[in-house]
Image (cartoon, rainbow, N blue to C red; front, side):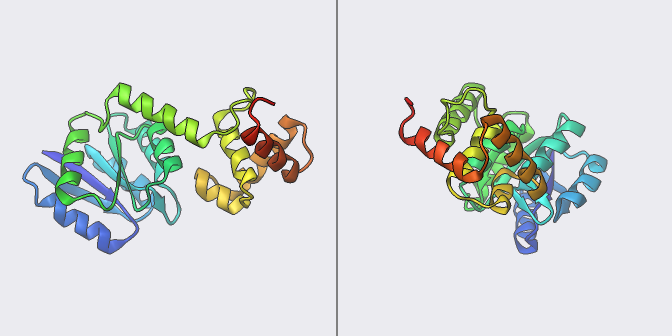
Length: 213
């Protein structure tokens, strides 16, 4: 029997998932939560085999929740569930140690199979496939490979600035607090020797279109 904990802020979706998974003879839902704080309070006490986590929650990110839960419960398998086929979220989830990532339009039997697979300790993708996908996603998301002194997170931040995103939008994209983004932007500008976001946007645009320069 594989025990499952569900985290989703939409009650109708959550109850539907409970009915779906509980109808399987070898799966049982042992708990549920609608927020990061509730999940952090309940999951460690219940110690399920699998946690199905919505990526976007009202008080934080399911990706960060995955990272925190796995730091407390290394044996826990996390399956990320989202309404959006977001490449950045997919990459972040895999780097956070998620065993899989599925979009909510997945068929019921496929979701049950995914939960069953990760519950048995098998990720949805093999190690080689995971590495290949992570590298592919990084390449698609990173247009500043000519700045080797920047970390991967800083390159993503720089590209967000290039797109003209606000700190709030960047915070949502990178699953960070808005204040943290503000500090990261200041640090990035200092690291590049720039005075403004406009200069950073110009630099990122030039590198994207003329990577040899």
